[in-house]
Image (cartoon, rainbow, N blue to C red; front, side, top):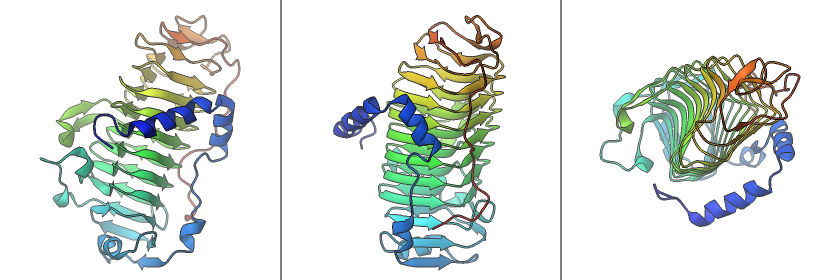
Length: 351
């Protein structure tokens, strides 16, 4: 996929899929595990065990495509690069910790697809599963570039200079039941097609400068979408206590769906800098400045709970979170919207 527009045929296929998804069906799929990856096929593949003290990168380099690498409990101080299909199965977040070795980070003079800036880097490949890790002390916790069908589940990624999870020029990827906190941004996806972000927690993200992205300064955002992307499904997440936005949608992003999320105690719950943002069944409450800032665009924000029975405030009639001009908020929910459980599971991951 090129840095500018990507595979147009893939974009058209993704658009057709998105336009045929009903909101009710999308919510139902989200609450029952839209895109949740079964690893049963991988469980039957050859497996390699990596105990604490061994080299995880060496095991990846030796692995055959499709192999399962089981990583034991402990701390691994490495920067890992994956460029083949495989499953990386940790002992569970908080038990298997990948702490980045910043001495091997590389980005100067390289195209973004070839950067190595994450504790875990997935580049130019497909069919990768990552389950049950804590990732820390990197520029990006997980860096995914030019890849397809990558699944990240039950991981915690925190205390990074930039993002907990960064997806660039990729397609058909899922981040599910994870946490991305105390970084500049919880998760970023750009120049990508058909990304699903579901049942995660993104909180306490505080912003910061990003050296490998021209020293751009990010505000503190839970989920950020940008750079000519198409089709992002955001389902059943908790976006809480981020310094600036719970969700930010920048120019050039199309077909964003926000369904059954809990969006509260941010400065702005949702910043919609582009049209084609649809949000239904969300609980948008206690955000300081706006529940939804339409930024002069049109936002379909019907059937949400705004924290008050009489609807949103701002240009709205009620006492709930404020909305701006261009936000379509009628009808609203008069009672709190149900949201699914979210965040990584505490029990050990299943193969």
